[in-house]
Image 1 (cartoon, rainbow, N blue to C red):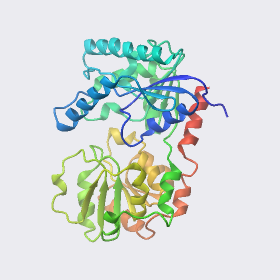
Image 2 (cartoon, one colour):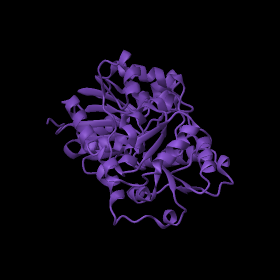
Image 3 (cartoon, rainbow, N blue to C red):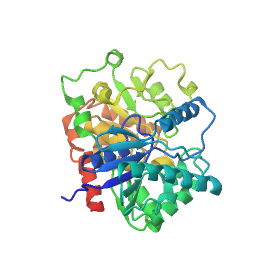
Image 4 (spheres, rainbow, N blue to C red):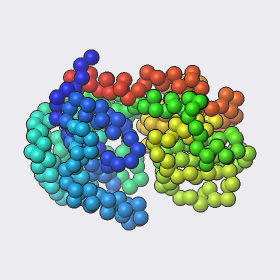
Length: 377
């Protein structure tokens, strides 16, 4: 198999810190045999004057002051500042000038020449042709214009990016259908899974954390960011319909909390380290994917879906297209009553089981990234 070897790669993506997303998995693979400059997120929306965005801004200023730094072998990090006002042609022009200058200076420091430009950021359409790149790739993993606060200017920038990039890679069938009409060249590469990591949930020696082990069974569990795409009303109704079960949510909370107040069987455990997630999965009887069905989730390929399956868990999901790829291992529900019935069905064979894990054993990140290498060589 051909692999990308000995190349210089410039990647525009999200902030480096945090649990590994698809971007980190892909770029770490590139860094095995190539040199990579990771340019942290330019953002997809204007910041709000809330604590989270202000904290992120302070952190970004601190990282900007650090300049270029190596975070692992063959992988360097650059944190430029940009004006998150994509409706403004002037702001976009300033961003292009300033960020291009910073990236070119980093390229000079690292000795990068004729790089591969690999961007996950729809607002980076302006960068194509400015860095002397040999090839340009846009990897689209979400319907970015559907995020709260994004606006239609992101959709227009993304259209320009697809039209200008040599290759557009998408992570779901819905994204493929939506980008195909205006992409120069397009390919579908679905997300992979760190199968070895999550399959630890199947091992008898993997201990269940005390905070989970002491809760009443069955445990109906969710892990991941609890944000706008999670149906908080459905989660409340699940807890009400199954009062003797423990509904457990693991992850940062980015939505209003009052809708869950007063439910003694609903447990918000907060974010837990990525390395510990298999331990929590081992304690789940059923894994939940309670997403709102809208323009954002119709195009999504949730990482947690394959992570749940790699852990051997039965999954109950709302009706998003990517949840329909795994047959009976994922029960897809069209409405609340169907969701409740699917939970009861899943509870007939609860907890981690090897046959479910084997369904995604050949969908590792290494396997999916092989496909990307084939597209680029």
